[in-house]
Length: 382
Image (cartoon, rainbow, N blue to C red):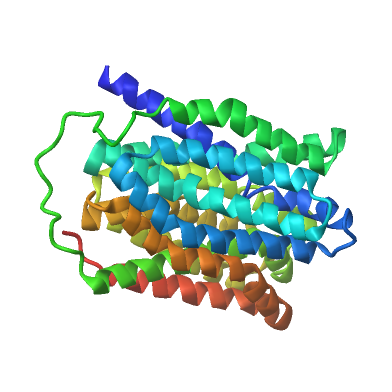
């Protein structure tokens, strides 16, 4: 009965997360150009509005996490679906760029209340330190957000238009994601037999918190930089356009495969072990790309994707393993706030580096990845 209940929670929350990511983080890639054209703007303005949304999500994250700590995640996640629907509705009816920016700001509120950090905090409230498996489970499902989101956004765009596509995502939030989040347990009462009390009363060491916040910021920077510029980077290495696109398509499957590995073999080890291996994957991929050029495009994509897949899980499991479940949601919000802000700037920073340095721009992200690996080596399990 407990296993069946856990499976239902993971399936419901994972599907709701897929919708949340697909209707926020992944819509600019498909809708930014037509959205901007409708107002006579460059797509850069829409991506700027999206960056603003990520900053808003960073600001609201600690509040949402603290509320989940106190009251459980069901209400916050259900509210996030209403907020997402409202923001998407504003985009759909926007008569002017100012309303478009307002819509993205509201979506940023939804992102801070309803994406991974909130979901991880919800699971920590339900399962305590046993949440590692469920956290991995929902990332396995939501790992297909781009696989589902991009084609669905493109389909709605082709048949109806970008405004109707935004409205369609709003309806999906209200009719599917909201009822799924409503299936979560009320409050923060554990859905399992409580374990022994956790010795988490003492505040976590400030140095450890700062190191982990740096790790999250560094790895989010690399992830977002590659999401925005991977084909251009691979072409700078000598890969043809078709090869660059095909290699980029491997990142999603590599992320999911790595998460399956984390769910199976790596779950026997402390999350620090898998996080260290994952953080080192991008620098190794960079060395391969610079050393072998275009033919290494596939290896680069597989290594980067696998590392990114495990690091997404580590963002939830590492704070839980290092600092315990007490005040987990609020702590996770603060730990990820710098990452969200740096993530907003990553496409611009790496794009400028790629324009100026070509393939050598990969040394920027490789250095960031090495710094994150070093920070993880300085952290010690409790």
